[in-house]
Length: 503
Ligand code: NAD
Image (cartoon, rainbow, N blue to C red; front, side, top):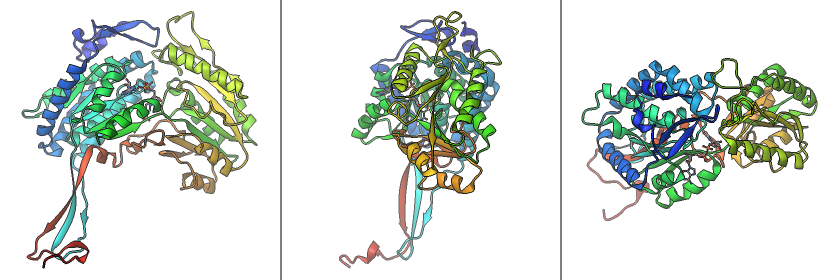
């Protein structure tokens, strides 16, 4: 598969992907797309020093002017949406529709960040002292490191990058070692766009930098005290290893880690909607979304009929190259992912699960170097150990329940807390699920699946998902530091709490 034409149209210089010790493969047929050179410790030092230097200038640029940079970048993305989406499909294996959606998310967050650049509000607070005023200001934080996963190779960076820039912070990005070409393309589009904007003495290159490599590069960024915030997206294991390093130097982290997302379908649910939502949430991106549906709690009165309808829908799924227009399920990212899926299915069977459909490798004759699978449904009588783990592949566990209280308890009885949903037409059930004794996730939906968030809301989850929030709402606050000011405009010096001292 030749992606060099796409890369060169996106502005990536051929020297950056034609030679180097790290081969980049497409999950579509396993062929080599290019070769890149990982960065070393010296490169990391230089990149962080450049970001630190750029921070001093960027924090002085008024926020609406920083927003102008992102406005121009958004226009560049609009003009290159189809091309970038093609690269996303080829490098990550995502079907075209989802790849276009991912680039649209980048465009949407650009629009959001431009508006935000005029809304970085602080509060004015009533002082207890006469002729005093209190206020909050939000200032730029410092250089931000973004570490990202393979499954959203462009959008996750854009969520962080656009907000970080309007908040006044340069970004150093370490993308997944499985998707470096998407990162090179984003950087090229940014440089082209920012070159057209007026940034005074600021170099667009220093505002955004890409460092290629594996966990070693991520660790160097985590340990560097000049990096004010490490925003890391990936597995819970990655967050567990990285977070203490940043904490040891009192840096900030924004963690977006693994999910084990569930849906509860109650007897009153519109089952047609529930089945469509299940299909998209469980098999979209071949089950490789952090918000993918993995646990389906079905009331015992509807369990068998929903499983039967789902099985029929699964049997009709079109599996194949993500570049073909009617494909719904593309490949897994690599052989390791396939092996983890098989191990999970074996464990599920050993733990009493019944494989209803799928799980097997398909299209191996046509694509011997790639890993396509028939998405699996496994009926479980109980929520066993394997069900409590995130397997990053299309396995959907179905579980029967009797009462909503029991379903919510089971729903919350996993270590992850990312996304959740309930299908019901009973307002009491819906409100219970959304209440303080309902879902314990960062995202809780009614009558839509757990997957496919909009950028306007804060995105992220609790517990082992890491607690971070990025994208919309007031997530921008993670990228700024808050200063509380008290201003005395009188002729006296009263102390707070009425304390008298040497007066
Ligand atoms: P991964 O954890 O293997 O890698 C993610 C990134 O972290 C990569 O860039 C990798 O090089 C880096 N990394 C790994 N170990 C590190 C360490 N010790 N120090 C510093 N950097 C390190 O994840 P993956 O396989 O690319 O992606 C799948 C996982 O990501 C799933 O668990 C999925 O749920 C999660 N994910 C979460 C979200 C979210 O928003 N919550 C979004 C996408 C993916």
